[in-house]
Amino acid sequence: MKKAIIGKKVGMTQIFDEAGKVVPVTVIEAGPCTVTAKATKEKEGYDAIQLGFEEVAEKKLSKPEKGHLAKAGVGNLKHLKEFRLEDCASVNVGDVLKADTFKEGDKVDVTGISKGKGYAGVVKRFGQGRTPMTHGGGPVHRHAGSMGSSTDPSRIFPGKKQAGHMGVEQVTVQNLDVVKVDPELNMIVIRGAIPGPKGGIVYVKSTVKKLIEKKGDAGISSNPQKASGRNPQKASARK
Image (cartoon, rainbow, N blue to C red; front, side, top):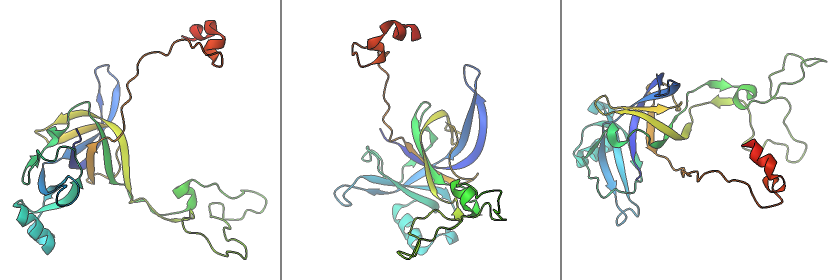
């Protein structure tokens, strides 16, 4: 079943697993999120729910936002996000989703806005190489260099990797493990790093990756075109 929630990145830390190994984790303040709207296949053409997160003062909302939230009969929520879930029929407007929507061991995708790096050159932004350091290279070693074309077309095509604003882009990290869930603290602990600065809004949802279970060792092949088929003693020795 697909699940989703809106949260806020608290920061990174580390915990120890049962084997005593250090696990780097990110702590997320997840929810509580209120269902503010519901889309149905009969009316909108698809099934989805809209979640609202983080109470704010009424003056910080626009007039359309106030009317939308007043119609749903919920509080003044700052962040709204729509999620297409499988079992939307069991959720109604006004319901509250908390961190216990997820459980330990779940695989999730986390979406957020990456950290802003300001104006960056081509070396930092795209990892391009420097110009020659000797033989008259001059003080332009980290510059982009010549990129203009000849008479035709005499311009740079759109999408050319050049210096510019780096970061502040939507980034999704897929297939992360939920290590711990604490509904009392509205806390979800996820293994690994997620995009965005501390305090940044993130969207946590069930992963779209298909989990393939291993069915055991392949063994020695009878196909003579494979190494294990040509020399089974060597293949068995590797095991």
